[in-house]
Each structure stands twice: as C-alpha cells, then as structure tokens.
Amino acid sequence: MPVFEVLDGGLLTTVQDEGRAGWGHLGVRRAGAADQLAMAAANLLAGAPIDVPVLEMTLVGPRLAVLADVTIGLAGADMEALVLEEDRALAPGRGYRLRAGTTLAFGAADDGARCYLAAGGGLDVKAVLGSASTDPVAHLGEGLDRALTAGDSIAVRDGGASTERCWPQGTASSGAMDSGPAGLAIVEGPHLSRLPTAVREALVEQEWTVSLHADRAGLRLEGDPIDEVAGIDLVSAPMIPGAVQLPPSGQPIVLMPDAPTVGGYPVPAVVAEADRPRAGQLRGGDRLRFRWIELVEARRLARRQAEHLAAVAASFA
Amino acid sequence: MSEFPRVSPFGESALLVELGDGVDLDVNARVHALAHELDTGAAGLEGLGRTVPAYASLLVPFDAAQVDDEVLTRGLLELAAAARPGPEVAGQLVEIPVRYGYDHGPDLDEVARLTGIAPDYVIEQHAAETYHVYMLGFAPGFAYLGPLPETLRVPRRAEPRLRVPAGSVAIAGAQTAVYPHVTPGGWHIIGWSDALLWDATSPEPARLRPGDRVHFVPA
Image 1 (cartoon, each protein chain N blue to C red):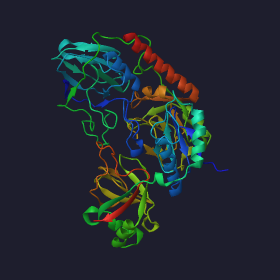
Image 2 (image 1 turned 135 degrees about the horizontal axis):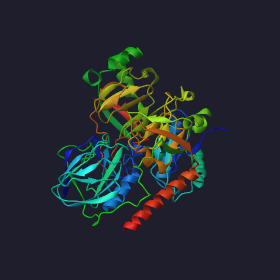
Image 3 (image 1 turned 180 degrees about the horizontal axis):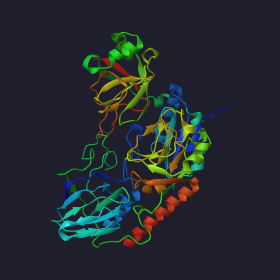
Image 4 (image 1 turned 180 degrees about the vertical axis):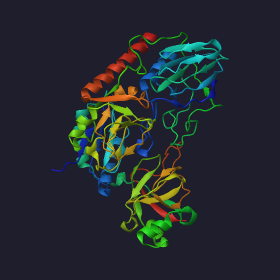
C-alpha cells in the first residue's frame, strides 16, 4: 500500500538495493546503493531485512507526505530531516515511528553525500533482472528508469520494528566523516604490474580532491597528474565498481555502482570492499588519500565489518 | 614463454583472466569458450558468479567466503591455457534488417568520402560480412561487432552526437554496432534497424549475446 507520496524529489532520490549481479555480460551495470553499509544500517533500524530496497537520497533530500503509520530507519549523511507538523528533528543512526498525515522533509547534507531511508518491511518495489535498483539506461520499466519526482507514490511492505531503534554508539555508519582527508584502502589492481613503477607511489603520496563532476558512475579525482600513464591505451576489459582507473590525463577515477561494465583505461588499484561505503559518501570538494593494503588484510577488514553488522542485527532481535 | 594466459585479482571477489592484449577473433573465441565452461558448470568449479567477457579477457566473480582464491587462480590458468572454441559454444546467427542511407544513415556520405568508396558500395560491403559479437558493454544490449572490412575502417567522428537514435547502425574503426537505445555516440551512422535488441522483461533480454554472429540485411 502507498505509504509515502513525493511532494518534492530532492536532488537525486532513487530506489536502490544491493544491486544487480550476474548481468554484466549483457552490458547491465551493477547499480545499487553507493554506501551499502548505510543502506544495511537503515534497514536494520527500520526492522526490515538487511537487503531490501531503500531510498538513496543525494546531497539535497526529498519532501514526502506520510500517508500511513510506518517505522522508518535513517542512516548515512545528516540531511537535518524534520517532521514538519511536529517540529521533530530526525538524525541518522536511528529508527522512528511516523504518523499518517505528517510531512517528512529532508534538507541539505553538510557532511557526506548520501542518506538512506528504509521503511517497514522494505520498500515494495518489483525487482527486474534480480534487483530493484534504479538504472536510467537499462530500460527496466517498473519505475526503475528514473529518479523520484513530485507525484510519485512509494509503497512499503508490511513489517518493521515496533520500537524506535538506535544504532550503538561507537559503531558509526560510514556517514560520519572525520576531519581531514578521507582514507581509502586500495589493493593492487590487474594492470599495476604493467604500469611504470612510479605509479604505485604516485597514487598514495598526494592528497586528491573529488571533482564537482563526481556522480554515481565515478568519482573523478583532481591533483598532480600522474604523467607516467600518458599514451598507455588498453583494449576494453571488464570493469567493476571500486576499480581505480588511470586515464591518459593522469587523474584517477574511482568507479562507482553505475560505472559501465567495460572500459579501456588501466586499473592500477581497486578500493577495498570495506572502504567502498566511505567512497559512496564522498562529494565534490572532499579530499582523500589512498593507502595500499594486501588482499589478505582487505578480506580481514571486510569480514570484521560484516561481523559488526551481524552483531548489531542480533542486538536488535 | 608467453605472458598469456594471465590471472590477476580484481578486488577481493573477482579474478581477471587475460588471454591476449588486442582485438583478435581467435583470442575472443577462446574467451567465450572459457566463459561457457565456467558459466555452465562444466569446469566443476563452485562458488562462481556469472562471468563477464571482453575482447581478450574474462572477469570471474567468486564468493570469497566459499572459494580459495589461490586454488581458483591455478584452476583458471589451466582452463585458460586449454580453452578452445568448439561447436557447443557457437552462438546463434542473427539477421538484422537495415534501412541504409538517406534519413536513416546521416553519415553514409561522409563515410563514402573518407573511404573513397561510393555509398552503394559502402552498403554492399557492410552487408556482405558476417560479424562476430566480441562482447556487450557501454549500454545494455550494445554488442561490439567485427571485424569490419579494412576498406570501411574510418576513425570515430570528431564530434560525438549527444543523441543517437535507437536502432542506429554505425561503424568506427574495425567495429560495427547497432545502438539499442538513445544514447550519446561517436560512431558513424550509416543506417537504421527496427530490430528489438533489448527487452529487460524477457527471459533472454539481449537479442545479441557474446559469441553470436550477425548478418545485416538491406531492407
């Protein structure tokens, strides 16, 4: 049943879940939440299964009319959400009971790029090709071809927590940004050994700035160009979100979930899975530094993150 | 000792198998043969995701919780070295009707000028070949086809179009393709087809799949 009506779509509000796996051979990109950790946290806070569809809200959030009582979860960047009729401020990292007849208004995020709204037992959105993630170029139908706009209604599956949950202190979801440049752990990419040795050091020795042209396809980074790659051209190879491409300009691009499935730029590095949520919170003007880690360490970090999530989930049960 | 095949980690949950470093029909056919073995389970390897082929390489996703990456790497190296195209891998032959030239092929005259071949002969040569689907990418259902006859090879347009009509049949370099949807594009448009190339609701969403062969038929 419809639970929300969109009064204002905000800058870019889309339905996302874990993304579309298994269709890359037909040119279908992964899509899915850019910050998977915040998405999972929002679902757990709402009392929904961890992988059901949520709303991903970008930089400036939407305004939603609440049509029925519902439990929601919010995680990621703080958009200073407000229940207008009650003058109630909603911070991320918590679950909330909302009442029919109220208006939920999201503002602009000062830190972080994306906030996630989970509701009830999950957004009631039909999966296409195995996922309910929006993809404007895949011609999926079922409302997955575009961002939300005024007049759209959002249905929610039955379920959800009966109490208002709180994310445990000290295990902040990746929306919380420390001061200073963000750190992204990277592992060796498939082309590193074929690039000049200077590239390895050049990636980590400077602070990069995220370009204002960053989007769901990629974070373009700005800094001192890594000149050693000028003229290196590879035949198109498969690509994955998290890959760090080095085009002839010498300015790296961190691929995001909507990146095309193939590409011809060399890939010297890949963002460790545990740090991809952090990459999903970066916005134009943010600074970042890469640091090299071994695959073994990357797997350990990812495992620890998953165990943490499971422990919090268990504490809510 | 050849540097290929090569198997490298691509993040924590995938390996990249490389069989070569250029656009080569034989190498590409071996990529499809390897993909077929892995995707059908014929190779007997568990915990793998659907592979993604490209010209000379294959992405092999795997469940890192289930699979030892070093064991998988060794297994893939052996399979890659032995991969040979066979009849069970051969894709389908797809005939695509095309209206060439005039309003449907706004760049046909330019291609004629660049190649020094009359427009009618450009069409004849384009339609005479049977093309191989090297891979899909760029957009869902967009198949990279080739090799284009040497006489028709021209560089991409200096200025890409912001909107290429869906169904446009185009060429650039040694490749040809049909655009399944409206997208930006920098290839030369020589014709248009009403063939349905992408339907997300179909059990087989893409009309053209890696390893298929394509023949263009003037309509």
